[in-house]
Amino acid sequence: VQLQASGGGLVQAGGSLRLSCKVSGTFDRLDDMAWFRQAPGIQRDRVALITRWGATRYKDSVRERFIISRDTAENTVTLHMNSLKPEDTAVYFCNVDALTMDHRTSRPVSTTSWGQGTLVTVSS
Image 1 (cartoon, rainbow, N blue to C red):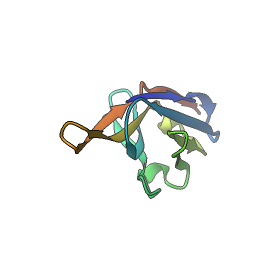
Image 2: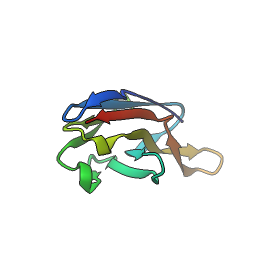
Image 3: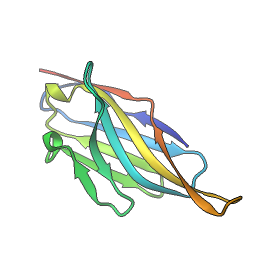
Image 4: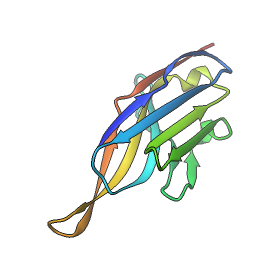
C-alpha cells in the first residue's frame, strides 16, 4: 500500500489549504483514514480521522476549522483546513489502515501505512 500526499504550502493566518492523499497498491478494503501532524520538537499527533463508515473525529484544537473526508471510489482522503493559525504549522502525514485477505490462510491482514508528509506553513 502506497500513499501519496499533496497540497501543503505557505499560507497566511486565516487562510485555507486542502491536503489530499491518494492510496494505491493491493488491498481489499480501506478502514480508518487519518491525518497526523508533527511540528519541530513535538510528538506526532493525530489531527483528524474518518472511519470506513464516515464517522469523524478531530483534535480539539482543529474542530470547527478542519474537515476530513474520503472518496471511496478514488481511494483518497482529504483534509480541508480553514481559519489556519500559525500553530497549525507542521508536517502533515496521511495514515491509512488497509485490510488485505491472505489467500493462503483465508484470514484478513490489517496493515497501517504512512504518506511521505507535506509541509504546511502558516505565517502570522
